[in-house]
Length: 183
Image 1 (spheres, rainbow, N blue to C red):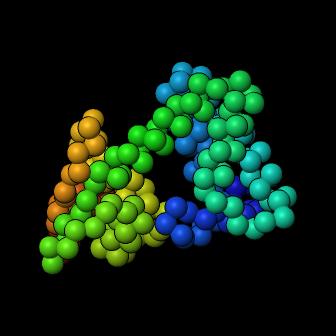
Image 2 (image 1 turned 30 degrees about the vertical axis):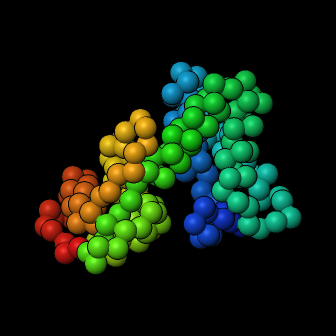
């Protein structure tokens, strides 16, 4: 049933994409794993239930924050509250770390961190599809967010460094031959 509904999700950056039950299940499972409760099958079934609910809604576009809140509420409803709390902690951690990250571009322009920009850079640099591009972008973003300190001191990262991290990630996963791409 995954992906069969007409539900669309309005992302944080304003982009609209089709609801992805496996993606939601993976996020819920990460929360379950962090809390030491539930299984991946539980996460898949709960994500499928959310997909059914969204499919039956009168609205075709739902904000990503609403989908996240549904996931947390469903986890609490089935007595997996610690998993829901773990999801909320992780979301807050990502928000704070993203806010501390800045990118210095080749023209010395500095911008705030934007995962959608990163995904577009990955897809454009390596001519990858959006799904694979988001996975690679997530890998690169995780590396950069892990380097932000506990006080959330703004961290400036050069665009060239971002591109090098993309290249290493793509090569490590064997998606292409390990050759550099110009930034």
